[in-house]
Image 1: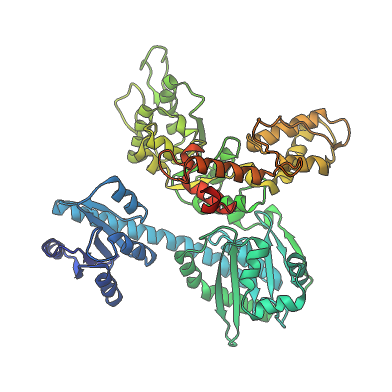
Image 2: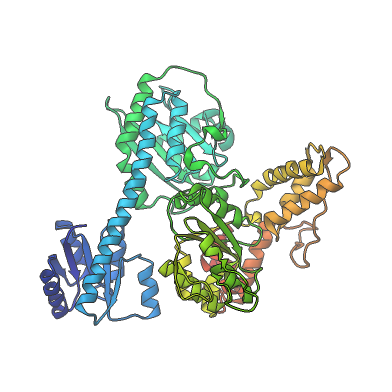
Length: 624
């Protein structure tokens, strides 16, 4: 970052004082703006390296509105405010500023904050640049590693997948009517599995005739069609202009909303040249070879960014999103908070993060905060010296010290006592521990992964969990979906557990009947994957033949299954869930957020409830 600073402050005397301080310290002040509109104009003329930004300024737009634009343009900014209320702080934090100073402040405080902001901006940009270069190097390697055309495109997608999340991808001069037969599209059906979707498959899935399909393309409505048949929520396209003047398009689609941010679009444009060269080489140097309709990649054939998930079974869109997030965060030292109900596989994802990280060959220490008695957990985590207390006959090394240079996994972090939360916060901030009975400090280099099935936001609001510790841990949250939201994974999981317990029990059960699979899909799974594992183990032990054709499921809790007035039809899981949410919303008078709101009543994060309402098409008219 350079030395140019823009001041956005509507109090002239304060702005001029800031300018004097900055110029005396060697900074170049590009201008003073008394409104957001004036700041936007100055930025367009002379892009600053950093903006000092007052939150409350004259005009229709606030400093926070401008901050959102600065973040998109990768311009660092530091807030200056005479208000430090909780509401202001919460709104400011969402924009991820590089610093926050409360007026009045000392000149030295301002200059130190600018130094910190410069370091954070430079380091962050450098880190992104390094990761981007690694990805470009992988793409460059494709130029000298000849593969058939279809395989080349798939390899590009595999490499990009670590940075660009997608469930469906199309590529070609035209998506449908491509006379050169280069139009390709793939549907993601697993972590590293893709099914080629050609015109016959597209016609079958969409139930359209060819002329209707071509009409969609002619009218530019293919995105609308893909959204309908593949449940697409967002998409982005990359146009490549080849040396012969032709335009080649690659389009990415996701079942999640807001996947393709301006930052991600900018990244695609930065690597456009490299991908253009690969596509151009593949198109002109190709030898015609037969292609496979489905690629099921072996472990050895996987992209390095997709290895490490062998212990996690499933291919649902929600799980794919978890894999994408895990792949992105694994390479850094960022703290990760894994959220989800009991039995959803939080420990498995923690394993994946550690194994995929540069610390993968170093210690991985696991601590279940819920199973350790409060009197012992401090000595377990931090260790103790000989004679520190009655019974301490030898020095003991604690879990944090054992995890030095590696990762520590704090499971059920929500069960940690308040006094221990203070000590954990100190470890995260200062990077050292102090054994019980010792006056010396021991430096530790660790990465922290925490997990909980509790709603930590609610725990914070009720005073049971420290706000500052929550923000330290919640740098990169990963939410694991419950099994009832990924029903398509149940047959895969059941088959996995069947093979596992077949081997353990010495049995030769060949499969599970369709009738049993339907029953498994209809069950609500309050215990999630752990419950499914136990049920399959029991079924294997009780099975008398080579097929599991009956299974014992727990009796439903009264009131969980509703009988409609339409004869004796039992409502589906989604219908029951929809009715339940509507019922709670009606009792809460339509309120979702805050004390007494539906989210608190259901013990869900408000954002999760809002997402489920959208998925189940619950609108205001259904509630009032």
